[in-house]
Length: 125
Length: 320
Image (tube, rainbow over all chains, first blue to last red; front, side):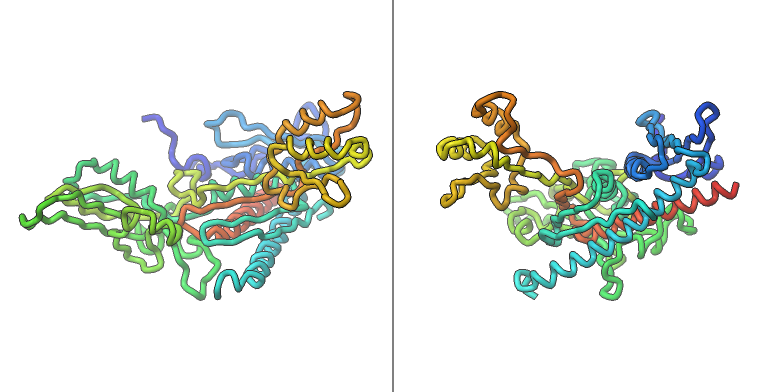
């Protein structure tokens, strides 16, 4: 009866004007802000957090999932100086992860091709 | 891109139903993201709507519909499109412009089985309706009956059993398969197993090892329940066996056994086994809906698209 919509964990509610990312600057901490990522989960958030922490310009990066039935994540980021904004470092982190994924895809394709070449006899073709 | 990693991949084995590989020079967060995407976000096809025309079997409509949903449905791309997954051939049904469903966003299966009785049979055994009885309207999409020939040989039925019919019973239905991800329902999950283990780093302390007699070394080798150590016959040194990475379970027993052997409790361990932070052994088995290597490639593409999407959304945020 009160079951949530089946797609509510991954499809943006566009009828009510939901956006993927909403950013709010922190009013109490300098160079800090909170990103609210709608319809995301640990899959991407943990990846982003770990990548942000590799950046020496990031003083703090952490995320919370408010409740298992809530489909957004909040990512808090604080940078070291006012020259780099949290949006910038996040953007860099995503770019780095993107190129890492590209590299990974090529690497996997090569590895598979090589494995097939080496094991042709075993496969019998 | 100053903080980028360049991960490496070594394939251990590829079979249609299983892939094993090692991901290295990366991070747990990457390994876990990959695992989670393979489990929950790789698009596949599964039966989502079932229209019953006649059902005089012992199972009710909902029960049969649920069982139909769990049958793996396989999309086999044409030779020219090899390496693509079902998202290249189908539209998500929510994005399709059609009224209810169409060829672009769904596949239809027909099933019509009647247990006819002529009256001449001596024994009337039940008739099993299986996934083999489903007739697809798209030749590229078929139910996956079994993962391998071995599995087929061992099975009693021709395909995946749906329901058993008694004499005179009939099942007639139309099933509509759609593309989806397993975040919505587990029937869209392409993997049965998707796990990673940490690579074990086995370090042997030569200095400490020199204090042991040959008998004590042999005892150390024998006490390890994983059998990851062996004694070199010639030099009398302890070393890790070649397949130690495969059989290691990080058991505490080795630690306890060593503590008892030490001269002083504060001495260093003879052998330490720790989990690597950047090397992971992956094991992925499929349900039959896709080939195992396809799942891995598809998962990486899903991640790439997601990151692109997030980067784009972040750009829009800056402009606001």
